[in-house]
Length: 450
Ligand code: ASP
Image (tube, rainbow, N blue to C red):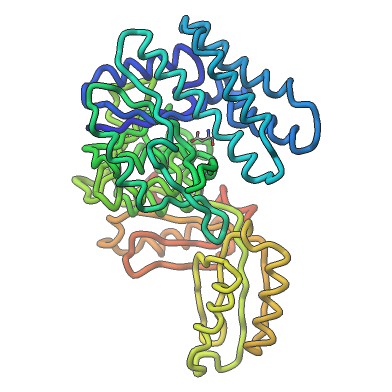
């Protein structure tokens, strides 16, 4: 059994939805499909999810929201009209209005429930269309199938383990195509919880793991994942094969092809993930696997991401003080902050974390605690981008760090942090945010245009 997930651009209009259905119908093993909300039809268009966010924001601000809601409905009307399935529309409108008009005293819960409707309505529409064209299909309600989520300490949606057992029943009826909405699940109380943006990738991965799929196909609008963001470099090197570990590192550092959290469910089961192009289904795409069969290049990919902060903690004779690091890390744990990297010197240690969680309020509290409880000095810097060079083949070759550092230095880029883990799968450079894209381009030129 193959689990297929289709992104927003693959479902943006009736023509794309027809392509998606043809892809699913062309292979008998494609029995479970996960759909995103309809995305942009043109470059300047608005995604349905963003239209829904506008509905929720208007309502939360106490404003009239009919115009915003109509904009969402218009997208489904256009699709249903072209597919000749207008009968699906009253059900969609009814559901949308009920959710949009519901209680909004808890703004986060309200926003989540409205946001999820892009996927929900899309799944209803696709299942309806398949049935109308003579193929057995069903819309799968995540609440009914037991896709349970909760929020972790940082407010992120995480899956409850029992969901995997619940969702395994999707594999039972192989006669029918299951159409599952991506991006959201429910709490044990039945309240809708969404993943972060792009989260339908996670739903697909969860379903693939739950049914022990032979492959998780993630259908998007590019033939391959590229070694570098194509908006930074012309005709970048295509990646035909990449390991979960490499992909995880690249997604962490800003690769947007796949959601960062989408690797883990399939990784735990060793299910290969194939990224494919809805507009060119015969292209082989990129395979994300546990073990490589070949290497096309020494470096697999280069990525950069802004939005990091550093706290450098300084205390004379730190290296002699037993338990100093444990006490320092405890402060971050107690403040509910996860740490990304910890480069250190003899008497200094730097904590690198994401700015979006390290609010000004947390900064004040943490700095205060470090100074008072540990008697150390602190310096906070909120201008850090992380650039990563990733590739398993690097483990057996000499001189890549030297080439990378020389290229960056020749380009006048100051390296604030350098880190290479013992696994040698990646090298990390910390640079000022304004140098992020430039550093990625410099490294790509050096390491791919040999
Ligand atoms: N529709 C959601 C978004 O635009 C989730 C997804 O497409 O994966 O982020």
